[in-house]
Image (cartoon, rainbow, N blue to C red; front, side, top):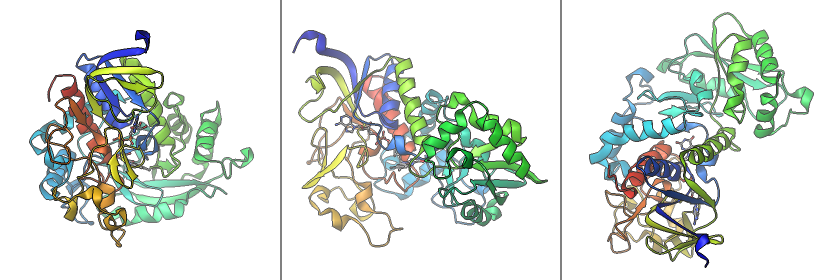
Length: 437
Ligand SMILES: Cc1cc2nc3c(=O)[nH]c(=O)nc-3n(C[C@H](O)[C@H](O)[C@H](O)COP(=O)(O)OP(=O)(O)OC[C@H]3O[C@@H](n4cnc5c(N)ncnc54)[C@H](O)[C@@H]3O)c2cc1C
């Protein structure tokens, strides 16, 4: 291979989701030359707009929002009660969790509102209140713990995608926790644009157009009543944050306006992915589109497209089933280095269980609300985030793992997905750059 196709760097990050981006930016912050390879956006690009770090596992469903533990204390309680969780493994460094969250959210400040240390409570499209240590700027004004008076829950007249009545009835249930009084409203928008069945991305682009958000604000203002304190709309308030769609609607309506969290397809997910790409470029991280396949490692070049990347350290941030970091080829395997999948949670947290050899069907439980071992499957790592091989030995002192590829937590449901990605990404990036944590 001609030398011009070879890139030499300090840190190679495999994966361009939240964990990989945080690792790359933390390593860059430490002065390292960083190359990040990613084949696709991963689950970060599908996320709903919340940065879920930790919510208090000890509180009861009727515990008021104000009485719930803050984010770091909640993570400590998770560490104390969930043996396989990465927070447990990293419990001696949990005092740095907030440094990681502040670093990562600060890097993404174009999109993310600054975190305060306590969870915001945001409505989902199904009317649940979801805890978020940080969230998109476009969502912050919809914090159920902060809105006083009536919260106007908006849908679009004739559009089948969102049901404001369902969402508002969910919000009624959390009123006793300190939430506002919800009121469902249908806004007569989009019908003139054949938008009644428009997909979220189409509606988001429509609202970005000059005059469109202002018109939405005027329609909302006509629907307002005395005592209305804020309004939430479906998560379609623009893809590009620079178009300031929520602010433009709010300026015409005369009350704060926010998005609820998103289901799939996710405008916030796409917005987040674009912000990550922009931030990586601005920070001087070289991003390569492509797939790293097994056989490489530190001091051995990794082939990416027509190029070779030779790095001193690696951060494996390749995600799980959505991202592609864990795949099933007869048995569950980690896809880049072929590492065994050993970590899970609950009864499978015992490292002596050969997780990889079990049929996947035996790793799901019939009760869909119970923790599903399959969904917590991933790499086992030591407390410095080195992946472990089948015998429990450190694979290589300069390979680190971060994010959803690390097992023992279920990012799809346990409310720690982005928190684990930010924390482990930050720690791994610093370690890979030789800064330690
Ligand atoms: C639908 C959905 C909604 C979610 N919503 C939320 C939410 O609102 N809040 C929250 O906190 N969490 C949410 N989560 C969980 C959260 O998105 C994940 O925990 C987090 O994004 C994981 O980040 P990651 O960087 O570890 O992995 P990913 O984001 O999956 O990134 C993995 C990356 O690795 C790359 N990759 C994999 N293999 C290779 C290879 N061989 N070569 C090159 N690149 C490779 C992928 O292309 C991708 O770029 C959601 C998850 C899903 C699936």
